[in-house]
Structures are given as structure tokens and as C-alpha cells.
Image 1 (spheres, one colour):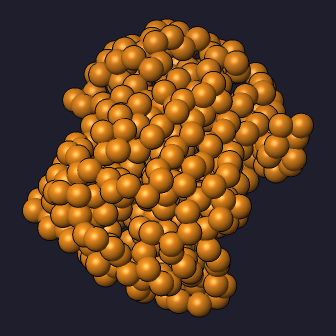
Image 2 (cartoon, one colour; image 1 turned 180 degrees about the vertical axis):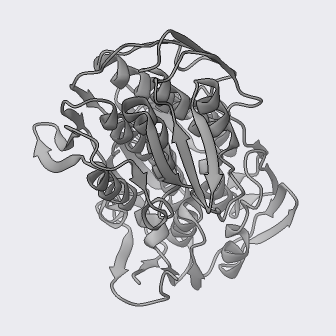
Length: 429
């Protein structure tokens, strides 16, 4: 498998255009199953995850065409008919979000057989809430030999769904199913992430009636059918935060464009507290640090609009060179400090106890061979390597390719010494 080699020490100067949001794009792609007309998604990221889902959608009957439009990359999805309601394990296992085809399949065809997504390295992430929401909408659910067998031969019916905690995936799944249900659905304790609003905007453009997305209560008035639409994917807030942290780590001055600073308010507040200069613009922000030492700060992950768990690893990398001791508390996923031992190979001083990590800043980091353990952990190692002395090689970068588009190209354009080494390192298995 590929590796990435980074020679640290170069400050970053330039401009980086942020791609469309991965976590939004994959749910928007699943929404294409809800109509027999084309759905055109613009500002689409080109990632391993979107390729995985496209492969599954084609198997279910979708025509998926990637093309270059006036505003960049776009994808047109057209599911004239569902030719198969089976989502097999060999496809679903490659990406958990593939499980979200279950709701659209039930809503459109009245039945589905979808593999359970399997385990996850950063925590159990069960799908119980997804299945409870579909049951509330009238689907009969049976689990057998690792598959979900779902039936709703008379269609789904609107219901009141109240989640015990705010789950992004379960909220999105309930929305995807409820838009074609008879009557009104009310989702209480809904997740409030920007991706929920993006999904609602797309569904409404297709003819759905969704109100309240982005708040804790979402109301959906079911419709008989949806039609085609054109929708622009929102900018990726995790990529935005990642490049902001990369600029802060390496030093220099980088302008991030085609994004929204308000999506990452919690992160930017902590970066300013640590001593990073952040200037907001209409289309993004500028991040600047000219050599001075950072200050340690405390961070606790929380659901949006709190500090995103998907930025925790990257922020930990930044704190490895801060003066003092930083305390980072992870409240969303268990087992999400696997990057800490790899950062320690670069010379970081980190101790982990349960859901808390203590990061004692060191004077310098030194390049070493490290290994990615999950998507966000992989890019935290790249961020740390930008400031490390000598060369760092990151293996298992297939994790990174799931969520970051042209990472090496974007960093290199700002002066980083980052290059991909093809065909070496460990296999995926």
C-alpha cells in the first residue's frame, strides 16, 4: 500500500481551496435512491468513500456519472428503478455510511436486505438507533446472519422518534426514510451538525417537506414522491479545521477559501487561545503563526456546535509543541486515542487514561516511521510531521484517502515537502 513521506521544517504560505464535505456527500448520494429522476450534486469531493458508495449504488440500480462542471467536480446519480434491494457485506463493510441505504430502499421499494456494517476501530458505533427509528416508521426488522431484513409492504408511516442521545447517522437515516412516509414525522433530540441542514436542503430541493434541520427538533411532512434536483455540497468543516491546524503547526500564513469559518467556531476559539492568529473572511479564513511558541489549552469533544471529535487527533498533534500541559477529553467515541502512541514515536509526551489524554509539550519532534490507525489519526500524523525534524513516513494511508482529497497537492502548493510513495508498506488486511 502507499505511504506518505514528509520532511518537516518548512513554513506554509499560500491558499488552499476546501473540498465538499465527505460526511455530507455520502448521505446526499444515498438520497438519490429516493427518486427515479437524476440528482446532480456539485462541489463533490473525489474520495475513496464516495467511490465505495458509488459502487454500491450502481449495484442497487443507480447510474453514477462523475464529471467536471462549471463549478468543479460534480456527480450525477440516476436510479430509474431499484434493480436489487440487497446491500451485501463485501460492499457495506468498506464504509459504515453505506448502511444508510437501508432507509431509502425501504421507503421506495417496501423491502431491503442490508448487511450490518461491522466493527469500527474507534468504538462500537452500534446501529440500534437507526433500526429503532425505522421500526417507529412502521418497518418490520429482523436480524439474521449479519443482515438486516426489513419489510414495509404498505409503505412507511410518520411517527414521533425521540433519540436517547443526538446521533448524526441515526438522525440522517430517519430523515432519509421519513420523507416518503405517510403523514408527519417528528424527530426529537436530533443531531444539529451542518451536514443535517445540507441533507434537508437537498431533500427539500427534491420536493420533500423538512423543517427544523440544524435544531434538536426536525419535522417532516411525508410526500408521495420526490423529483430530481441540483444541489451543491457544503464545504468540509473537518478538512477546513485540519488545514487550519496544519498551518498553525508548521507556521507561516495560509488562507483557506471556499469554506465557512462558523462551521468550526469551537476549534478556532481554542486555536486563538493557544496563540494562533485567525482572521475570518466571507469565504473562509487566514491562519497565521510566525514562530512563537503555542500555549497549552484544555479541550473536550462535544456534539455540534461543540469541539468536533473528528478534529481531536489533529488538535492533539498541535498541542505536542505547546508550552505546558494540555488536557484533551474525548466524550463521543471510546478508543479514539490510538494516534497517541504513534505521535509518541515522533517524540511527543502523551499519557492516556480512559477518555482523557494529557499532552505535555516538548521542544521539538523528530521524524520517524509511523502508522495510521483511522482516518483522522492518519492526518494528525501528517500535521505533526510538518513540524518534525527530518523525515517522517506514514503508512496505511488508505485511511487518509477515505476523507482527504489531494492532501499532498494542497500542502505542497503551500511549500510543504510532502510526497506519496506508491506501492509500499503494509497491505490493508
